[in-house]
Image 1 (cartoon, rainbow, N blue to C red):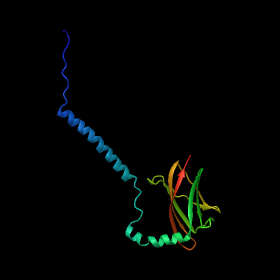
Image 2 (cartoon, helix red, strand yellow; image 1 turned 90 degrees about the vertical axis):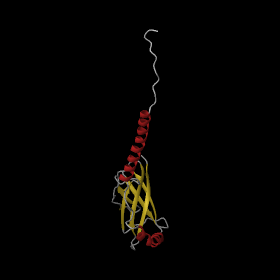
Image 3 (tube, rainbow, N blue to C red; image 1 turned 120 degrees about the vertical axis):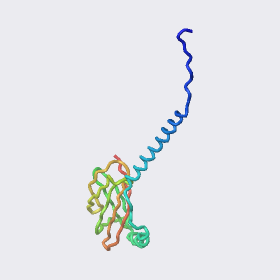
Length: 158
């Protein structure tokens, strides 16, 4: 046996186990920290400052809004968003005022405030929309002063 050497198998030591555990838990902790940061940095904020105060008038506002009998439907065609507000009879409603925020449900970086104009049958506004799900958070005021708030879901396909 010339030139042959017997090789001793490598041992798995405590140092190897420590490196394996540190690497394993290091990856888990890194991913958790990244996910927590992403969740907090994309949170759009609170809806109301004091939920108790808001809840005290909820039923009154809901009843007034339901008494209007309005239905809202949103659609997007090309570079235009259409917001159709109809009464119980399906007739278009022209409101005293309308403000809306158009954005994603998950973050506020794509939020837009389109200027809707009534064209005789619906409210239309130019908007740049990528494919996907969008929300229109609208506040309309009826001619009698009743406030109508609603979140309308808009699905954009391209």
